[in-house]
Image 1 (cartoon, rainbow, N blue to C red):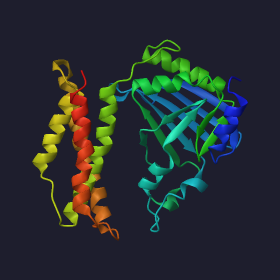
Image 2 (cartoon, helix red, strand yellow):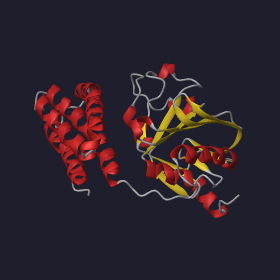
Image 3 (cartoon, helix red, strand yellow):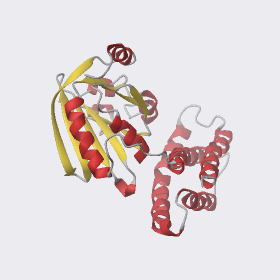
Length: 292
């Protein structure tokens, strides 16, 4: 076991979950659209699943934890509806060995209402982009994994070793190979979150009858974004696909903004918040445009 004792104690102290040991595991290759698919169970009956994805040429790791209904029932509002904001605030990082990785996206539960939560309900955390994935894989030779406040697992080295090798093979990487940070991809991830927030904030402001963002303004932002994040003649198809992807997120973001307007205090400073929310959108695009 390579993981230093003091470091293990520190990592345990940072997590409210007691350590549990990986009891069984199964690695599958090219399953359900994933190049590598690892399913593990712990001695406490919880399930940790890790998937390597190359969806639309973007490498990512997905971490799913099920068997924790007692914890998941906390993330619902007084009406019993899922509180996505609370979930995203609660789980922001994972720990693999001695390294901590910031989560880029928190996936939905398989439950919309608190009454639907059961042992099969899962929480998913996503780590995006090749350089982040390579960093996480490189840390998997340590016998420790934690999602603070949710699960802390030991006896991971054998299962992780097989998953790591499968992932290296799929990504065309050699063990320990360093992948340079893709700054344009980093700015794109910032933009995507900011874009959804801007659309939601604009929808709140419109529902509150204080301001309105025109459809043409949104289209102009999307046109500029696709050119900034996928420049060059060879990326024509990616620009079109990315524009379609951004357009597909608008309706859901607008719905969320409309719901926020109906909440008590939801219209407070709605106009100012909508205006401020566009600033990180523009900044992310500008930063990507400056990447050589």
